[in-house]
Amino acid sequence: MSSPHPQVVAVLERAARSGLPLYYEVSPFVARRIYRDTRGALAPKPPAVAEARLLLAPGPAGPIPLRAFRPQGTTADEVLPALVYFHGGGWVIGDLDTHDVVCRQFANGARCAVFSVDYRLAPEYRFPGAVEDCVAATQWIAAQAKTLAIDPARIAVGGDSAGGNLATVVALAARESGGPALCHQLLIYPATDQRMGFPSIVNNGEGYLLTKKAMEYFRGHYLPKESDWLDWRASPFLANSLAGLPPAYVLTAGFDPLVDEGRAYAERLAKEGVATEYQEYPDMVHGFLLFGGALDTANAAVDACCAVLKKAFRGRT
Image (cartoon, rainbow, N blue to C red; front, side, top):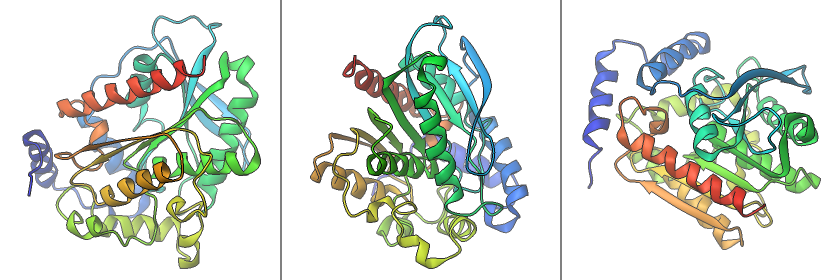
């Protein structure tokens, strides 16, 4: 059995010493503050970008805030490829600020516009509120391509954890409704099956930041009705078909409760004819991509994601 990377061990020890309660021991309101503050302490310094501004996309329950980034060294009228990004946090926590740094990294590293979506969170807004917002935001961004100075033929979706779930669900919804055309899906340790039956949920369910109890807490807020667990908009792994989806890059971490379902989803994508690249970081834990201030591997993984996006965007020029 392998061991977590020494830098990961230091992060785990730091978390254990913090004295803060676990997410499932507090209300979502408090959990959001814990997540925001602890993630900020592990993030690298925010890289400068040419632009970071707030936009509002029309949504089914009112305007959806987006943070729009344009990479360093570009002009306002330069037509760029785009990444529509959905943050992680179990559909309950996380926001534009917790994922600001990684979105800046993606913008500069892949030389693309990034639109970070501030979708509605549970329990205030349960399933399918987040899905509806993410679909609406993606449709609006594609429809506004000219105004936003982006190339409508080079729009990718991406996200981490719950955001990885939402990214592939948006890709499925776009396939079902005949658009918008998406060129890639960047799925970072995605949650794909709400039944939570894969072995890694037990094997990695304690001691590696994301725990099985926390996953049950998030699912309880987002999907309180057990019947909804089987809906493909909650569990994309259970979709009847994954054929016809855009090419995918699936990234997982070896000590993550979600590693098995991420790998299984990548295998199913490939089996059903979707061009899929799978990358597992065996000595990392869930959430590691945001920890570039403490983990060298996090920055290397971000660079790898940027290289994948650049290649995907090049393929559509």
